[in-house]
Image 1 (cartoon, rainbow, N blue to C red):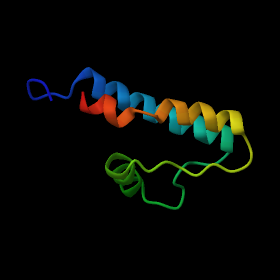
Image 2: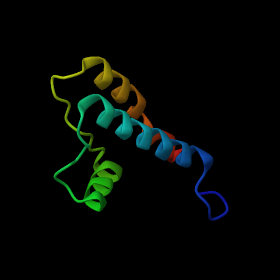
Image 3: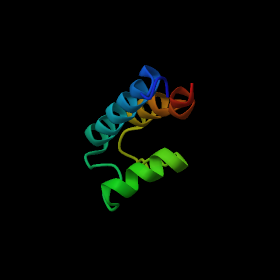
Image 4: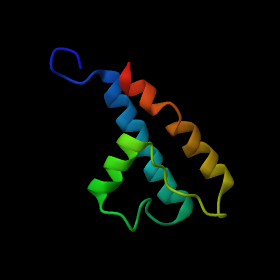
Length: 78
């Protein structure tokens, strides 16, 4: 945090993660972490780098979202 506010990098990481979850839903046809309360899903993602499990439907979509979410933790910590 800089001056009591999160850095732009942390905000960017959140934006990338949010976009990747939307892309997941578009490619897979169902919401990520569908059987988990949204607060628990966010906690698991932030603290344990939890990511949704991909089905066999769309390998290209899975690759895109995996590339987007790689390194988000390191972005937020810089």
